[in-house]
Amino acid sequence: MSPAADHLLEDFTRTRWSMVCRLQTTRAGDAREALTELALRYWYPVYAYVRRCGHAQEIAQDITQVFLQQVAADLRNHRNTPPGRFREWLLARLNTFLGGEWRELAGAEGAPEAPPLPELESRNRSEHDPEESPEQAYRRSFALEVLSRGLKRLRAEAR
Amino acid sequence: MGRFETTRWSVVLRARGEPVEARAALELLCRTYRPPVLAFVRSRGYAIDAAEDLTQAFFARFLERAWHSSADPERGRFRSFLLTALKRFLIDADAEAAALKRGGGIRFQALDDDGGGGDGVGEAPDAVFEREWAHAVLNAAFGRLRREAEQAGKLELFKRLAEFLVERPDESEYARAAEELHLRRNTLAVAVHRLRHRLRELVREELSETTSNRADLEEELHTLRGSMQALAR
Image (tube, rainbow over all chains, first blue to last red; front, side):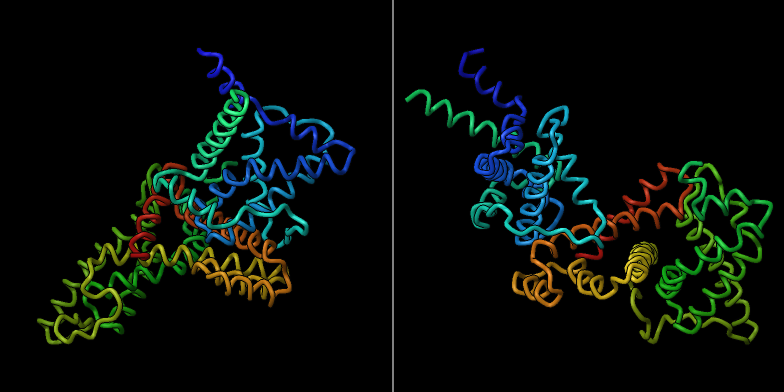
């Protein structure tokens, strides 16, 4: 395997707990920055999952926003890093969140700003596979997200 | 005790020799699934009054003669069992009606010529039965969801959110609902998802009441999905 591919694979398989650790930092500025990064990176996989559950665009966008806000808040208050891959942990957390008690209203103020809907939807259209389950859509888009970031980093390093 | 040991249909099946024990469970099942039976009878061409009478007579005989005691406890879905029993009953009823007609008395009028049938007339009776069964399952689950909301004092919220379970809202409608409920939009979105999730759980629970094992439940879910797609077309 070429060093470049090694590099990609490493990024692909590595969990993103380092970012989570930054969320737990005591410095407010750092934590905010980590939250923004977390939201930016994992927005689309979560959005893709919620869309595959059959929700309209705006509803899926809002659900994603509240979820990522709550995840960030949970992680900030959580001193120990949960075991396993971040990707699977996030998916399990998403399922718990979505299956919560509907009568207990969960919303969030000051949630990270959502990427614009046209952008999310253009990606959703281009990657749409009607046979795909929400979990498959999540895992595939998560992997693509990590790969494209790995590629960007490689390109930057090659310059 | 496993989940399937307490479903209504399991209770009925287990009580083969003891109809009293199973009576309440069976009556409840018959009440919930009366509409598909009526729709099936209607789609066979009976006028509404005659179809009502026949449906009534079918359930009375079903319960009186404890037909359920002949169901196979190993492999028994209430839906298939009920439909088979209904078909047999109608063959007898048709024969009886023909005999009465020959003898001068008409008890059940078959409506082949006046075109006055209601929903489902002209469609294959089995398809009508499946479609109405899916409706009955959804109605029962929706009723349970509504009762849960009522018990929690959230009926108004439920009514407003329930609109979004049926149809996809456009953005302005969604924003208006959030405003009327004094909720943030994203709070409304999460509640809509969770309500739908709960409805799905209740549909599954409702279906499991008519089955006695997991394999049958999965098959019922598969049939329900098929009927729902047919409904949406």
